[in-house]
Each structure stands twice: as structure tokens, then as C-alpha cells.
Image (tube, rainbow, N blue to C red; front, side, top):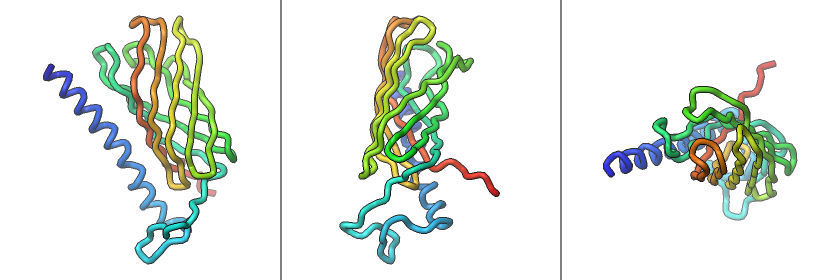
Length: 176
């Protein structure tokens, strides 16, 4: 029981640490780029001001998912998101059962609403398993967060599901 509580706390801390990257990156970026929303002297958006959704660009971050029944703990993996207008695509690595080798990529797609609400999904089959992922959240020019679930059938565990949290920031742009 004590180990389960410790793992739950570790997962919560990992999610909080990942989510903390978004405001840090956003503050850093605000010093280098013009604001995309009208603001007051404190640098916060004025009531009624409309935010501008990113219409194109790459975002990078981390996906952190709850522990599954194996001795290797939570999933922490890179997460790449690409926005082109209202269309969104993403990719993240798929690991073997003990997370020691990358076997492929989970690739999904979805939509970005004008208010910044984002929804992406993925379905597929891999190594005798079928999987489905569903993530929702918000995205702005400075980054965003998503939460969702992964579920699967087949494989060593026979099937299961877990919750995931994702934090992304704008990908570095090549210096030119």
C-alpha cells in the first residue's frame, strides 16, 4: 500500500513538473516576441480581449502517463505537435513492454478550434495489440496542455488503460 501511495505521488509530481514548463517557456518567449493579445500594464490579457490561436507551427514537449502493471514506472516520452490552420497532428514514441527500446511511433490527428481548444486521437495496431489514444486541452502561441487516456487490447497484460498529461511549448526555430 505504501509503495502505491509513493508511486501516485511520484506521478503527480511528474505531471506538475511537466505542466510547470509551459508558464516558464511562455514568460521567456514573451520577452522575445510581440504579444498576440491586447494587454494592460501588468502584461495580462484585458477582459474581453480575444486570444489569437496559433495557425501554424511546431510544438514540442513531454507526455507523462500513469504507471501500468510492469516494474518500470510511469511513461515519460517526447511529444511533438504540429498545427496547420485548424488541423493538428502529433507523434510520440512507442516503447517495448519494459521501455528499453523504441518500436515505432504513435501518430494521431485532430482539430484546433478558434478559441484554442484542441482534440486529437489515434487508433492503431502494433505487435499483436490494438490501441486508442484520446487527448484534449488548450493551445496558444506560447504552448499548451492536454490530458487524456490511452487504452489497449492484447499484448503481455491483455489490455488496459491509463491517464496521461501533456505539456508543449513552441519548438525552437532554426537560426537563419
